Length: 178
Image 1 (cartoon, rainbow, N blue to C red):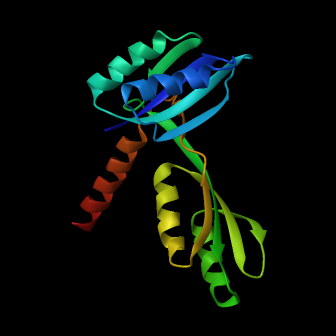
Image 2 (cartoon, rainbow, N blue to C red):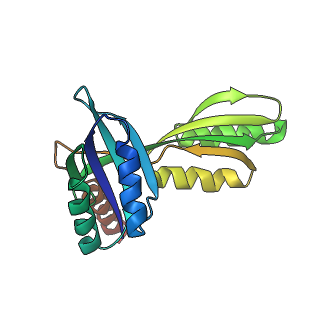
């Protein structure tokens, strides 16, 4: 299972290196990593996607707290949260394909951030599933380059679970179709 860890750290040189070293020594992979300033001056938020079972993640969390400059570690995997990613995709786009690609961009609310005779570059933000879906559709046109930020996440203040809402909507559709 993949876990989303949100780690608040003091904004000091070497913090990320110590975290990466801890993971490397324990043989863990970080599948996604995003770092940026948090809401408090001098504090950064690190969002990591880490594979492992609950027991492994619990042990990893304990080890993180032993590092200098770690303020708080949250496993937000099963907590209602907002998750977003940013991806830039440069896709081959001849004149015949351009309108089809623009239609795909509109459906996914992507922005065209660069255009040339041979390529379109799209900026897409949203949940990780949206990134996978648009990438799959654009592969047929030829993706020349792709850059993805990794997932960022914040706990929902409303405590509303989007998974619960999705399941409720799907159940409603199924009951209408019966």
